[in-house]
Image 1: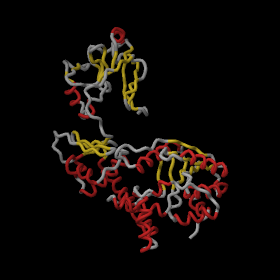
Image 2: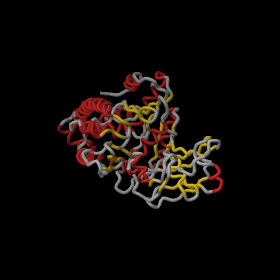
Image 3: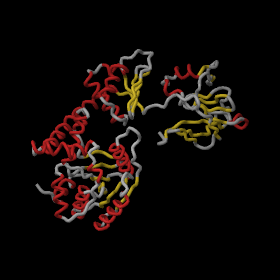
Image 4: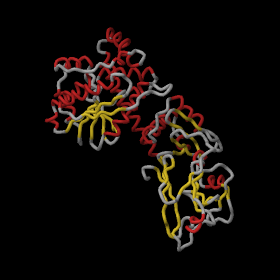
Amino acid sequence: MSFNPDHLLQQLVQLSAVSRYWVAFSGGCDSHVLLHSLVAIREQLDKSVHAIHINHGLQAVASSWEVHCQQVCDALSVPLEIVRVDARPETGESPEARARQARYQVFKEILQDEDVLLIAHHEDDQAETLMIQLLRGAGVKGLAAMPVEAPLGKGRLYRPLLGVTRAVLQQYAKTQGLVWIDDPSNQDTRFDRNYLRHEIMPLLHQRWPAVTSTLSRSAENMAESAELLRQLAREDFANIKQTSSRVNVEKLLGLEAPRLRNLLRYWLSEICQLTTPDRRHLNRIVHEVLPAAEDASPVVSWMGGEVRRFRGELYAMQPQPQSNNEKPTIPWDGKQALKLDKQVLIPHQVKGQGVNPDLLARHKLSIRFRHGGEKCKPVGRGHHHSLKKLFQEWGIPPWQREQVPLLYVGEEIAQIIGYCICEPFQSQPQQDGLLVTLENETGH
């Protein structure tokens, strides 16, 4: 088998709605072959070609790699975007996973509508990925390894070389006289992928020469099975959906355990955009959270996600911070938008609604949060109520209650933002009162 740019052309002409092609260009052999062959068919594609190089900041010679990539792109008349990231792992974090996360975050940010990012993963990479996932105990979706095509940010990523072996790409590079970077970390067998590549796969090749193509074929079969499971989960979700972030517990319990786990994976990863929990955490959700007593407050947390149950509904979210009774008082003028973590307070002047402007002129405003024991007399109610009782009445889940902002005028609650104005702060019908609304950072 050999490789030439026509093989690449046959694949790319089948892609629809392409504005620009980007190549993830590390400077290594595989990405150099991809970029070189793409340039060879650039006129036939009639699309602009760009390259992006990510400097992970992990190698002392990384700056010289930037220079090399720039020289290659200059010679090919390809615009190059160089982005530097801090990919140093936190304690206990996989260096490979951290670098990948940083890299793909940049890709998401740079891709625009109808952009396609080409990545030079090949057949050997696919076989190694399948082996790694198998050794991690992955399910069907994990064993599908790397998809040929997937959405990424506003654009798409596409892997046109998954049917080509590493040896074939290296032969093309040598024939074309390409010069590439050899990253010394690729020889470090402390990393799982390198250990498989240098220690395990050569032994498998000796016994089964076609092992990479066989494993890649298995990944394709798994991808088909994963898509069928995804379609089933989508149908199940349509039958039980309430909102994207919460679902009905009773309807979930109507599903058999395998189908329930399949639905939970789909909901948490694709709908809620959370990290997919492993089987142990999924089983805890199924056996501990869903059947919990009505008055219980069960929670299951994992790296990148969390589920809780409240009033017959299962909620999914990012892991919530620990309760903090030392939340500061935030002075505010009530005139400019005020950012609070991931949300924004927006002031409005509304005739006959909101907080009385005469009271605003005489007292300082501040934003505070519930500590416990606060009371408020909502407009139209005959007497004061504790915030705890009001939050229960309004169905606010317990973990959200300390995050509800309170507008104070002086030392009294004037508005429970998003819920009610408190007496005696209601503006008169002829007055332009201050009404504060809460929005997230995207304005929804």
